[in-house]
Image (cartoon, rainbow, N blue to C red; front, side, top):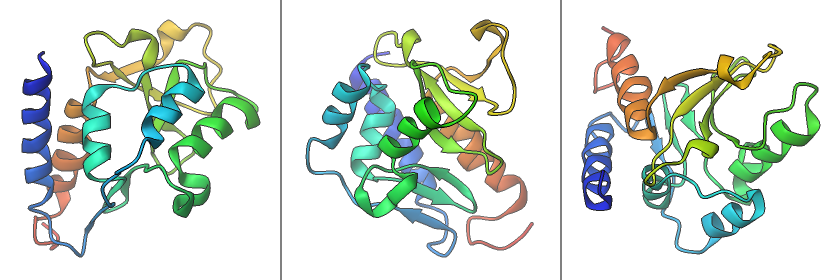
Length: 170
């Protein structure tokens, strides 16, 4: 997929997310500095283009309990850099270095990018269970082919199963 097609798809997803009432969605502010580039240097991997594009426009997104972490001191321990460090250095079941957690499930597990499989600027999303000892990384569930698919299903479709765009229950 070409970069322009990725940007267009991301813009469509952001337009869809913008349909949700402001009472149930929060968009972070735009990133206007080099903190993502510094984060990539720190972890030794490039982040997927779709994720970076959306994060630069909205530094963190929260929709009815589903969250995409942002990166900033104001997020404290929920900042992308702090979560990455914690999940790779401070827990008993450490994540492999190539997994980059970007969204919690609320039970200690995370949706992560498998950055070792970054191909043509996109990479798969895996679901890392913090309390499961994987005999092999092949056993970690690949749940989406890329971040755009994850946003479409987890943020948009799963929300619309129970809640209308205006925030009312279905």
